[in-house]
Image 1 (cartoon, rainbow, N blue to C red):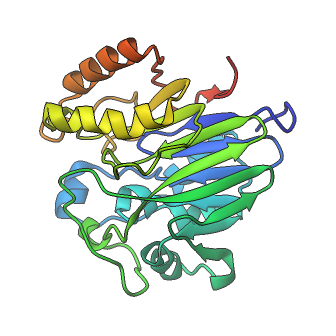
Image 2: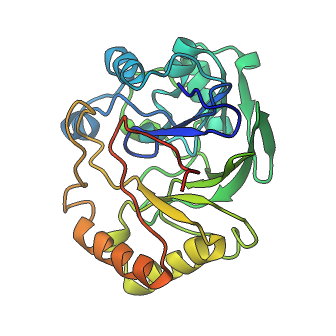
Length: 286
């Protein structure tokens, strides 16, 4: 992927919080959740990476090699597939100690994994990834840490969050903030100069108006992006072979989220763009 030189960054969205970035020389994946098991399996069965779905999705997007995979937190819909993607494409797994225990359970070598922490900076070719501590969206059902190697198939609840992160990614072409959970640490993003904000909106529609306004203030107003790309809004119990659709009403009220985004983005004059899965975009092109 990518052909336009050092400042020509391309991005692909794969649903949930999975975002691929490449400048043609280096490739970064955030999370990498491609298996997307059904709600029935998640609720009542055991989950494990689906290698066919993983390799099929990567091939469809034209992703053939990887330098770094950063995991936002270690719930199954963020971390489960990450070690298998690294084994398939190469590169290094970056995440919390809980994420590294998922890597160990999948047989990744210690030298291909790096533990991350708040404030850490990691160089990947022309990209710099700054790690920022975050908090999970309200209603975190699987709190805690993964304290030993996790070997799937396991219950989805075995994937404890292990601590949450956002990623501020800079490149000669521009800057992105990938914010994978719809919650905020007051003042955390003050002073960041962000061109494109990948903004988690999952469960935002069922939150009180005050929370929604605080979220906008501490994430969007703090970073003043030129573009908002919503993430983690889609029904991740449905395969990527099918069209993306919002989470069911039992989990979120997408219409309320959309109305909120429309209103606030119009007031702030910041465009909002929902990308299609597998669509190649140039986030810094205007």
